[in-house]
Image (cartoon, rainbow, N blue to C red; front, side, top):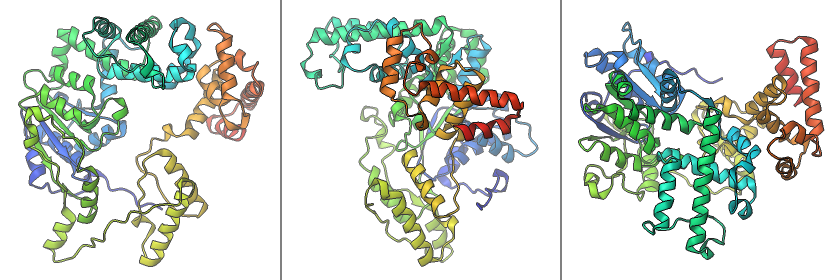
Length: 532
């Protein structure tokens, strides 16, 4: 059984000299470069507590932005623990998207939210309304929609709407800008300039059509939350003034994951005081596919040229051998700040210092600094098996406890393989920082429940149809959807596809079974689990 985590109130923390400089900063912009294990979250919460304790700000004048809801909740809990007995009501610790969504709601601009899968299905049903000419021939519709959604996300991250993109195409036509690559196929080098521009015109037209369709039906994406909030703040001076009073001090966690649009919102909210405190690790950008990268720090420097730079240099988790190995992997990464700004003189990558080694040396103890091993597995299918075998061997040799082992994985597929192997061998484990709602099993369960309550819900029915037990040919289903046209619905289309009637029949059977038994939620979920 895993050992319960200590609450923030039980953890003792003594900041080092680097952390102290960041915590005690009050006015003006600051960017804190914090490598893994350097205590950046604690620095953020300590700084919030200090601003309140010393009277620099009231709780409702502080806006702390994170990238996950769990991080936002943890930040509030830590600040509350730091300020025991002090009311922190009004403190805003939220994700970027939550802040923007609340702003839209207060202004009566909220909309129905579509995630990527919902938007894909929405556009697939309306594919003929997009008036495709070139791209519908160039590839299958599935690939085109995947590419289109990626294009729209990138535009939103860069605050590029249909009008601005149309202006970009007009500049291409005048020869003012170099031509872009408009296809990933081998045909790209053979396209003439006019053919490239024609495809750019089509992209511009499709972009405008999609935006108009969503606006008419009051629908939007997560990207629209950001762009919508930015437009409100930029166009409404009274609203901006109000928001600035509620964000006199802005703190941003995981800043390396910020994109251009989010940094521009920070710039608007900061006003003349520019009390923006950004913390992140430029070598850990996990949302690079969403426009985030170490370039966020260079953008911060341009938006706030007077910003101070602080570096957290001590790692509290690892020993020196691990830190040096990690540094060897990132040593040649691109500069964090553009050379033209001269800021590279303020920070050059260097191995983090090990607090554990320093503390051990002070106490007259020696830490084990065994070299890091690089192990080549026999191949992907056997990687999880080999890894668990290695854990078992080391546990026997070193007489370790299960809690002495940790596995870091790059992709969720690696986690799933490992979990299966651990379960098969009876090894106890826990998974950290996983949103259970993002797991395929739970998403399948939610789709099943959604289809039972709303049998015509296309997104839910589509996900059920993709379950292996129904053995539906996905290509045949896509072809049938295309042939059915925009006025048809997925339920009618499934009736014409091999295996489709079985999907609809199973949904009806489960729905009637739950209704007949008048079951409560837990019993209903047991039936769904058994049936699907």
